[in-house]
Length: 398
Ligand SMILES: N[C@@H](CCC(=O)N[C@@H](CS)C(=O)NCC(=O)O)C(=O)O
Picture (cartoon, rainbow, N blue to C red):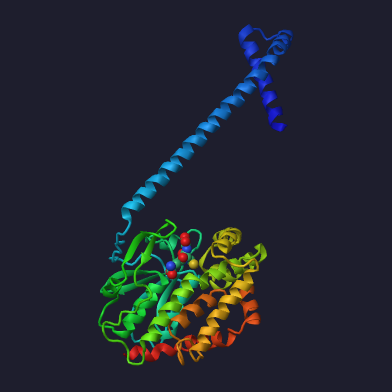
């Protein structure tokens, strides 16, 4: 209505101007007559303009649609060309110019490793890596990454976290993917004569299309430890295979229980993001405007996305039930291996991986509900005690 009114009053003005120009006389009667004669005409430009705008809109739509389709076709062609090729991970000559947010210093650390972890405090994959480093008592710097703008990792072509940057012979080796990072560090602790850079060659990153045709980067061997023909005497082959299997389960199955549960409702999504902000010390690292974007955009986006994730990973309508079911699957495994851990009397890498995943939601409603409705609490707090006391540091002297 208001749009029409504006159009009409503009048309009246235009009408007067045209009349004045044509007659050359500024005469009220003339104007009125001219307006009357033109007022029928102004309705025609309106429909012509509507048609013009319509055609223009369709034209823009077709152009944008075609542009998008062409860019998708080109991307698909490029990805097809990359199928089966190895991603070239370059050593950096300089450390990226990003200030570390905080340092985790362990007095037990004898590794000499100089590590910087680019992370989100509550990302399950980052929690897995921190759990491993803390368990072994390895010192590291942390760079907290803004999950929306991600400017702290603008130096990297890989745009996910965690990224562990290791100083090796005055250069910087970026290590990607939480499971690969865990395997590389554990392999290094087993035999420190092989550098992290050399070890990383056992974990090539390949460009592939998965079974659904989606293009992705796959880290080969990421669940394998490189024992170099020297399997520790206290490890049986069965334990090694089991450890691999359950680490993979943590990534392929268990982690997918989290988002639909912690972002189940908009209220829960906001509660989750406020807890992320609290434990991630966002008020120390990010200005208020950036924090507001992170919390509001994050909570609304994740609440919406979690509905698709629920479908994609086949969770029950009552998503909590699926979460409890998987926790029970895990606890049965822990029990069957004699406990208190899956690894026996000490946590193995699968204990650390599953613990890391759960740790990432420790302050959420879903975690509290799971404590009440399942019996994982005893195992969880036993692992926590081992991690917080750096119980794995006894292996550093190897
Ligand atoms: N397979 C990777 C997954 C890492 C991952 O998905 N990280 C998420 C944070 S929880 C991320 O950075 N997402 C950013 C994005 O997908 O754009 C790993 O295990 O490290």
